[in-house]
Length: 381
Image 1: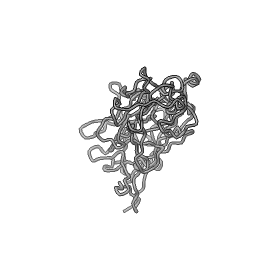
Image 2: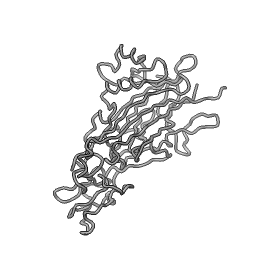
Image 3: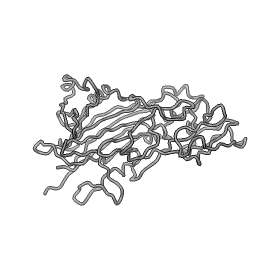
Image 4: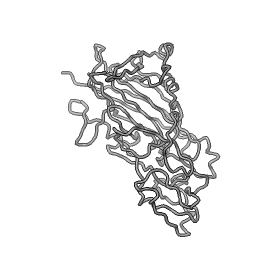
């Protein structure tokens, strides 16, 4: 028996952050959803590291006119396949050269499907479990001042979606069934902690939310409830009743949250009520209480959390023969796609977005870029 080897499939993404309203924001709070900040995302292509035995394709999701016409297939060197997954037939586009989908083909595909091609707007999932195999995944748009509930679904153009197909082909050019595809590396490199805001939701053999900048084998959390300074000025937002707004989700009913007045000396002073790590500048998460306002007891209300997997929790363990496996003892190993006997093609959809509740999403970080590199592996046949 020959020793199994692994193949790597690398997808690279390049992005930058800018603020269209940064000059206009100098008199107000500097952060998050308050201004027209966008994230620029551009795909730099895909490639197979060692051979053509592991291929990646794009799955057709548009209704009506196909994403790639007959002429487009020639232009981008693609081939079209009707693949069966159970009782469903899916159209998959593969690179004829088996060297990966080109940058231009990826951009063409995203334009046709109306998802973000090169601009991501901060959105939020609200509270959710990291491993989410039951509830439908939704992204919600940024709130406006006093809009305390996050129940407006985000537009498709605010985030990017890549429905990927994986096939394993042996030396006889036959599809190989019963192979797991693993995400073995997700590296985000960025300036000024912008990398912290990037999230990926993967829907495939397992449905899991991943924070690429978190390399640990654990479940991390992001609070999705708090007081915010979205409106103009350097104060937390409040209503006509002088109560500060409680944005997002909490473990208790908002009507039961208790409020209290501060000492006079505690007003008009920066207060880290949200527990941010960087207190060197005013942001939406770090601001002042307007004189005379009533401040909620956030600690007792308990903000809900968005859970995410660290990359180390998804990575498989490796046995003495070099094979991958789920390590139940250490709690890691989550295959993202599987080639089955029915279809012999594995499917996984990647939703890539910027989490607005992450404390790194502030205007002071506008203009900084990040790189995201994903690495998939599968045991060679």
